[in-house]
Amino acid sequence: WPRRNGMRRKGNSMLWVQAQRWGGKNWAEGAITPSMKIDKLIASITDCRGKTFASVRKAILDADKDIVEEWKWMGSPVWERDGIIAVCNAHKKWVKLTFDYGAKIPDPDKLFNAGLEGNQRRAIDFMEGDTVNAPALKKLVRAAIEFNQGKKKKAPVRTKATTPEKARKSKKK
Image 1 (cartoon, helix red, strand yellow):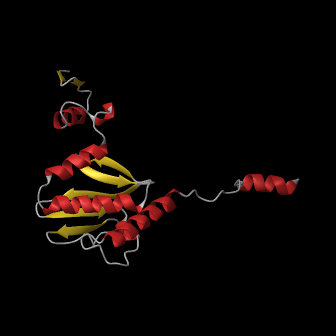
Image 2 (cartoon, one colour):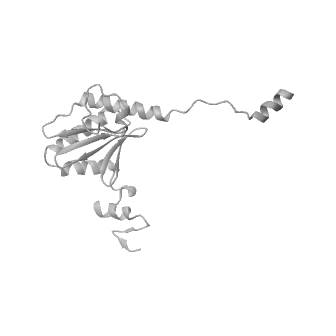
Image 3 (cartoon, one colour):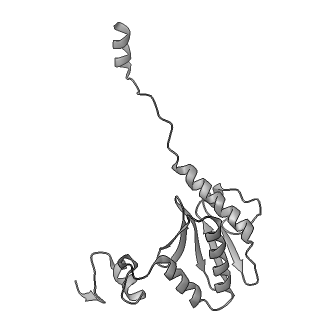
């Protein structure tokens, strides 16, 4: 396979796409972290969406110190802790924050305003002029973390099951 910018295509053309998009280096080499990519994305959005995006990011990161930023799905910032919390994208006229398990977490402040018909995801669309309700968003993020942690809890330990044949043999003894 031909080499481009020092990267070799190995069946997955995404490595090459990443190399082209980010100056010839992929983040697996340690050159550009997901947080740096998110910084670059926010800096490239010069209108009100950039400020909204930055406010959303700050509120999410302030909600819990163990949240990890990732870069997935061809350029989407993702926040995770014990699973995906939310994905954020800047569209032409709004910023969309989608919670992966939004349908399963409480929303007492009624922040969700998009994706209400689904049974898994819920989203918040921030239009021009909207402000980020940081305290309510932090509560929502914490609820998503609690949900993710609840999914990871182990099932109760079961006792060793016996087959009907083994049960008959034990009665005969």
